[in-house]
Length: 67
Image 1 (cartoon, helix red, strand yellow):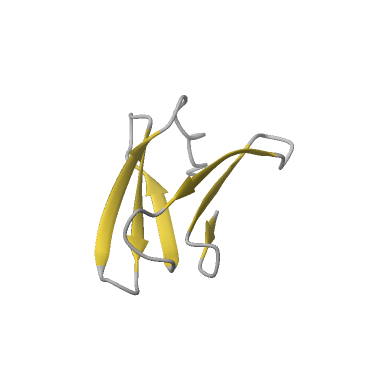
Image 2 (image 1 turned 90 degrees about the horizontal axis):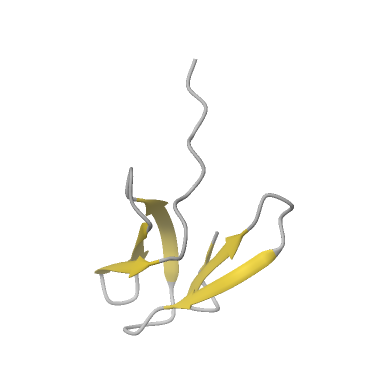
């Protein structure tokens, strides 16, 4: 979950508990994020500087439901 005013992204477990916080090294306004499919990487956008960031996490994201 991106948090614009804290400059990073929270990683939550299945119960909604925070397991990690990934801080932007470039600015304080992270506005969006997504897991790269099939990887443990997230891609974040930092809108104050227009930077696209990537971070490795210990586990992949949950697959999205598709009908």
